Length: 491
Image (cartoon, rainbow, N blue to C red; front, side, top):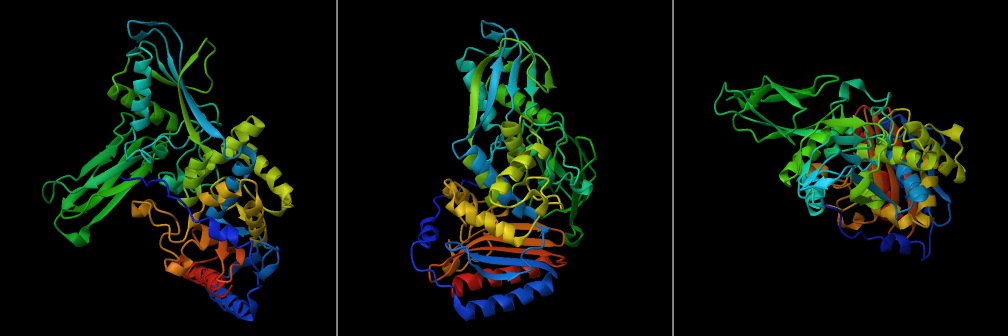
């Protein structure tokens, strides 16, 4: 259950220098190759839009139905993250606080302990060696340093910074247990998921071994999975009973199989947060005597802040775009609404993004944008609108932070493999390394790729390839890659 380390230094200079030298248009050879590659994409995805623009001049290099809006899938994150960079700035920090009321006598807090969420999605083992309770133990040590070893009152979980609705109405209801549809909350822990690990039992016919990480009391496992000696019979299904915290495991587990590990969402993120915090505090030597309860607002009382946990916006941006983590993108959108509209909702966040795009000349009625991650099929933009955004952000005063958040071709120093950069297996040849910076996207029948490519002449391009109606997304990806390779090889 590893999580990736933060990416190392990125080669931004090469892309920036592309603006300083001569910028030839690429010539007929490039255009012919783009036409040929586009035809291959069109065969794989008939509902196609392509737009390629030279970043320095803004000149269109190539276009195919560039003004028709398409479903953008995770390319929507380009818009969410750009608005966050512009409106919040890279100097912004998400701050979660641990607050107390009551006197401390002989190591006992005679009152409640409250944790006030601010939408930070990073509290997990992602940046702490796979240890989901690392942050909470750290908080426990800080409480002990303040003289608190026991909490006589309740643990109050305050999640009102975001709206109560955590699941967008557009998201497929049959996938709510999947990590990419994790509910959004101002209090987020472990990506609002538990890790379910299924291993073979001691012998054929024995029950399979099922473990939950973190092991919290509110999540219950019902397993009917058995061990088998037949490798061809190996088949495991992990689901969550709708609206409940019951994880259901079924199927046959081959006795020689490696552990099968999958993330399963929880429907009540604040409660998961409370369970994790209680466990982490206990490990740090802080005992809770009262109950754990969720409040939308901090009860009126003289509270004092004991712990401040701060996460940089840049950290959230990089996980959002490099790993295409939906939960992080949704947290960013609701954060925009909370900070700039006083309401942490999808609707208010979308209004902030709309005001930002209007400054770029992209009018509200010309596109559709309803969630931050692109999980909704109602997130629709045209390729020209995407390249307009990319060009704007390249010249933006905080453009470096935006560029650093995107996936780079050749960026393979993130592990484990199933959580690496979304470009880790594309453009792997050395000549493309750090010459392609992009955001991928995918839904059923949808494959998108938008970003920047530096040609061998030094010309920098912004491109957007939006493929809809693609029954075989892998074919669309191959054809998309041909377009981008042409920009690097012939541009």
